[in-house]
Length: 563
Image: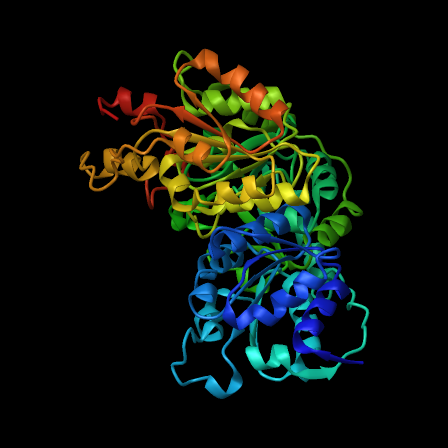
């Protein structure tokens, strides 16, 4: 049947099972929004306050469900406002399809009003992107976009459509979406055998879990694997929840703000098994001294990650879940009492701690964990609060920590929280922010109120850019250049002005009742929690130092250093 390009876009979204879209309209994309209006009973559109919020909302929706998130924007600044959100998704392998509209085909390349080459701009930060100038190419391009976004190592795909292509007619017929198979074509039997030999010979194995284990839904296979080889397990920020954070074999996060048990244990191990991890600089510290006593077995779906940052002894290319299934089928249960005892001693000797007699971020997050019994989904912005959320809220299931890892995007969390809550209506969803991050996209509180999306926004308000200030304290002689936020913004009044319920916490005894009431209200809530400007995240590894040199506040004090 003959349909307009805009009708084809809507039909293709329906083909792919899309029922939720985030976006912001404008002139070039008006035809598409007109069709969305006619199909509002099938596809719910959430109008965000800013296009960046739409991209982050689609990202949160995708991360928390494993589905492909969808967002839309018009040409020019509408499209460019999506760029940070696209880059954020790209760095963390998040499946998204971004639909933008551009000026008419005849106006391309003529510096027309609101014309931007968004395909050229986003080429380095998308898995693939397309420009569609003819309506007859729309359906197949959109189908390809959804397939590419979700297959293999996921990522964002942008489809830019000229305005005349959304208006012109073309033939359309329904097509069943191409089934996405798990990536197994590169799993070689000899690679499996080499991995099994390394595992059988080692005495002190350590498992390092990254975001790929979450994406491949490998939690059950990972648990079986860890128990079978009796190996301690650490994770990256993106790997949180892939392995149960309450399990006795779990040692905490690895890297710059990882636990000493993880950092010291990886340094001492004789076999490091990395699963779905890309060995980020924030994880490995000094690459030349990382896991220097260990052979490295790397399991990843993306061959480009092998030997990119860390030299491996052996590797297996393929879907993490499928690889672990094959390894588990060939492994007998082994016990390593001396190694596990040693790791447990490290955990006992170097627990995560915080000042227990004053209001601070870790205390609030610990209370949130207790009240929710670990059953909430936590989104975060980026900075100290993000690290505290990773350290003091324990994640026992995948897709329960939604955070920007690779890009480290301030302003990410609130939009992501909205998208996550839209997709998980039966879950308590909480965004943990610093005041510096919150002010970047705080206008999205209006979005939550407009649609009565019952999110909880917690601002750990220290009146500074906390993580940058921490670096200035430790490495820049306390020269606090542009990190003190000494303005008079009242976030309670701001939140109330946008229609949300708001609280201010200044005392420890206020934390629990406010959190319980916020959860019970089931409406958009903002909590402004006042904490100290000089609170810090520990342990820490200095830039380019080996992770074996992780230090705490007590370590600095023992050296006579003031922090």
